[in-house]
Every structure is written in structure tokens, then in C-alpha cells.
Length: 292
Image (cartoon, rainbow, N blue to C red):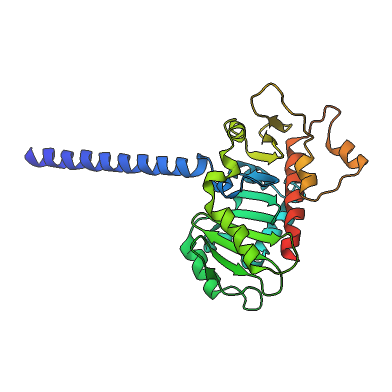
């Protein structure tokens, strides 16, 4: 009888431990998947515009089948894996980088930037020191605020720290290491003056948008769960009217009048699938200068 009681106690104790562990894991996974990203914190307050693509679910929808996924999905994905530091890397996750789940593109007076989430700075450090092609990228230079590597053949930089990595092309084509360092320092250190702290912008994020665009004080969020893209604006009386193609033009995509008629309905709506296609197209155009 005493042995049975002891056995039952051990079973109950083990069950409680397993349930607690499962609960902790579930909370951790939920936090990691659904918590709001901090990647936009790197966007300086003086950025002309920025675009945040932040949903795993959007990517899953896009990759559901080769027939239905957006036409520009593959172009954008291959552009990403052919960025100078990632050149010929089959799986960026092995380097400690998320490719498709959290992407921020932005531009300011100093140049244009593409940012991704770092999952392991240790892996990324190791890769940049030992595996990057010698003729492509110089050895990393460690700064107090970030670690930076520069292209040997182009005026292009790759910097990372903690949970973010940034590809940067200066607006000035003249190579100026000092100016590049100033630009990257502002990206990695001035969190108190990040555009992300803007209260009106936070109002857009509070509406559970999968994609967020902000430029010149105007912005919108996008939800793609229905047939048509649903646009969410800051909760204020003077809601701005902004064409769904506004960001795409900023990224360098040009549209003819017939393109606009094909893509948008008479009510200025755009189907979710088409919006996603144009998103990948715009991000591909934005990244092209980083590849050439």
C-alpha cells in the first residue's frame, strides 16, 4: 500500500512537471510567433518612408502551391538569397537569419536599407569570418554599436547587432567609409528617436496588420485574409486617401495606365493575391541594386 502511494505521488509529480513544461513551451512559442516585432526600431525618425512585411501566415499563403502563389514570389526569394553576404547560401536559417518572416525596407537622405531579423548573432559572426567568399566581402569590422562588412567591389555594406541585420547602399556613389559608419550608427543606436515610436504609427500596428507602410506622415496597414486587401488607417477623423500602389512606386516599380486598370478595381480596391504579388515585385525591384 505504501509503495502504491509513493508510486502515485511520483506519477502526479511527473505529470505536473510535464504540464508546466508544456505550458512554458506553449507560451514561449506563442510569444515568439505572435508578439509584435521590434525590427522597425532600427528605422530612424527622419526616414522618408518604410515598409514592414511581418507575417509568417502571408508567406505560408504565398507558398501554398506553385500554381497560386504570386508570380514575383520566386524572384524576390532568389534576390534575398543572392544578396552579397548570403550569396549561394541554400538555407539562411543556418546563418542565424530569418528571410521571409520579418522584413523592413526603408530609405532616408543617406541611402536605402533592407533589414532582416537575426536569430543567432553567434552563427552570423562565425559565417562572416569564415565562409563569405574572399573576393566578395571584406572581413568584419567590429564597432561598439554593430559589426560591419563591406563589399570589395561595390559601395555596399552589411551590418548587424543583436536581433537585426541591415544591408545598406549610400545615396552618394562616392565611397566614404566615415559617412557609411555614421549612417549605420544612427540605425543601430538611436532607438529613442526611431520612427517606430510614433503614436499614430503605433495605432496602425494596433489594428493587427500583416503589412505596414509609412511615409511623409501618412501610413496604412494591410490585412490580406480576405479576397480583397483591407487597408487600415490611423484612427482619426482626417483619414488620408492613398492609392494601394503608393509604396510600390516608392520602391521603383513603374505602372502604365493599363497596368493600373488591370490591378485596381473601379473602387480603388486590389485583391489580396494581387497585392501580395505587387509587394514581392516591389521588394524585388528595391533589392536589385544590392545585387548588381
